[in-house]
Image (cartoon, rainbow, N blue to C red; front, side, top):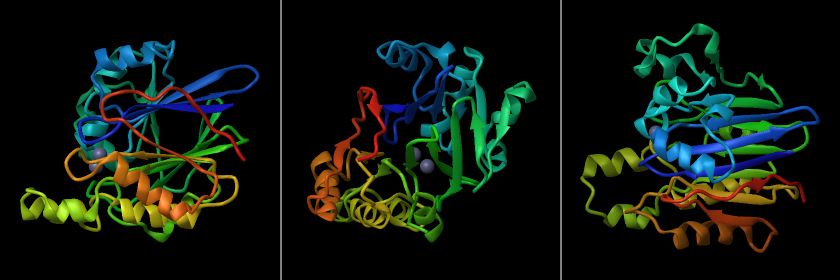
Length: 264
Ligand SMILES: [Zn+2]
Ligand SMILES: [Zn+2]
């Protein structure tokens, strides 16, 4: 069984817990660590877990909303870190003094096994050194996680084929961003090819990876100023055209409950 809970989403911090259970064990991987230890522990507690239940942290890239609290979590748990060389070197991780046996290097298009979970990382176009997003599977169903990307490359489309559930960046509405009070350099960065995915681009990506066994999409990493949950949802709904996919929008302030990954 594969299930997940989005614990935090957005530029103030990201964290998604993924759990795979087979006949003998459960494996829990936290994708990104942008929540402080106390808050993370509280949100894990609401799911009946604690920091010591984490088997690994998968860090997608070196921006603070993804790696900001990883060191503190590693100090308070036995979790390994799954990370690309580029992200490692672009962050302050080399100074953490982490035991090498706790580092699992991640490479584009190279599967890794962590207990009952298989992870398939893939590179995305984003202004970081070696950003990786991922799909993961328990062998039965597959979850895709893709946030922090400026545009949809063919590699991203290929990597997300066959997912039964998706956590998908819907960062901004293009009109709201264009009209916002953000300085021009920031607007260019966000809307640029190495920035963040708009609702419209996200809807097009979903269209290209949709298949009859995609059952669930969580819209994630929403800008608090240049988007609304309603706009993100309506962009995705419009491209789904009544196909039976459940769409939800991640909250910037609260965790989701457990969401079980199912095929139709
Ligand atoms: Zn981010
Ligand atoms: Zn980022």
